[in-house]
Image (tube, rainbow over all chains, first blue to last red; front, side, top):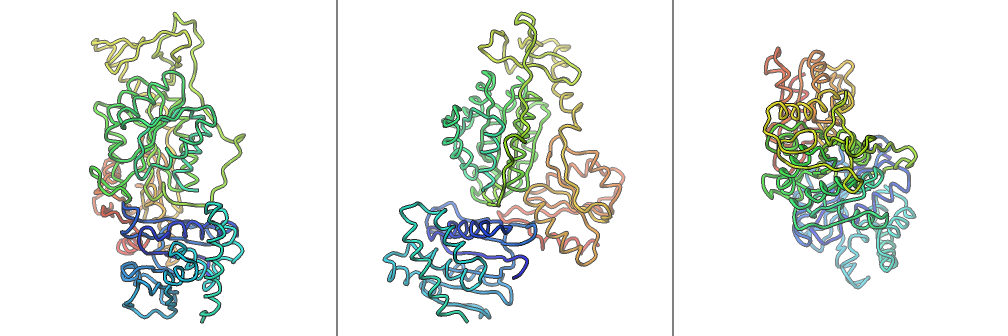
Length: 181
Length: 372
């Protein structure tokens, strides 16, 4: 594993990306690794841009914002267009084809799945898209262990929603196993 | 834990038992957490009608014996300036946390900037020496909040803690120290009988005991220039005595107040001078530049006011070039300029950005390569 791993989760406000970032960061803390989690978002609580950066490392992390991603998750076309160029050559790109229709640059390791549609269809609501795609991402990249993610989700969401989110997580893991290149 | 959370828990561990404030992005989490935690511990949380009322409330609470703190951002910080001046002239301990955002005015509420560095020193009218601290991590936000409360108590003044938006909202893994290892300073109490008490007493270090209202001591508090009992005066001798005391309590205690971090400066030919989040970018740039054999280091003030003049003079003697990256149109760099009398301007290189984005390690690395 790389000494320092940079992940950007991007999309629009309301998609739960900052929560996904917090959950990923907490999973890394559970594994006793060094981690920073930062975010950037507009003043609106829904719509507008939103992104969460997570850097996981075994050394001290100086700059906490991701600048050259090992992995980019893009849930909207705008996010994909803006951040795609900062993905490393060997980086992993994961896009939600529900909203991303146009890929300006062919990344080497691209995974294209309609996460929002899948969440709607299999889990009854698009609200779990963040956890579904986060679980998919962690399984593809192997950046944190499945059980750490599970524990982190349980510690991060309200008790009433743990079961639903764990379901979304399991579905994300399954999809990743199916599609992993 | 978030930077703002660390500030809230630092305040609690330092013994803060009164918070009055008006929520504002990107500082809201400080108020949010204290609104839950203070009442549990017997403290008081008040959401005020605005920031002017907030600074007045924490000043009043402090005079009644509380350890008080408020948190705000640029627009609120501007409103608080008159109250900050009042706390300083009345020598009332309190802490103002300013989580900076893009300005001027309401600016960009969720975007980082380091535009309040000069305002933190000069924001209030009249000469009033300032103590301003500036952390660069979540852990340091906790530590410097405790230090801010301690210095406020010790020096009887309004201490300002400046955070960057990114530091306030960033999450990092932090292990807070055992309370047994946290050093808490409380204000000096008068030992004289009430009729001998002077609200502004002189001593060697210019630190005078402070009685609280309700303890039997009588004193007068006014924003007017006052004598040692606190009553207004127009006598020039008493005015200069008061102004000198305000100045000397900072100037005579520089060693206690100034804190700096010197990072890989031993053999550096190029130095970077910056604070807060921009120093984190600088450290990353230094690691990259050193991998290519460029000798570069960082001098980072944890206390930006009073300014670390001696450390900066030493840095200027030892390096050929100083790079000053900051998220404003040039504030820290003026202080370096003030101290670079015998150097040509070519040796002082600014990197400035005010568009809501951070200065990145690559921005700094590019400049390092240009000058090396």
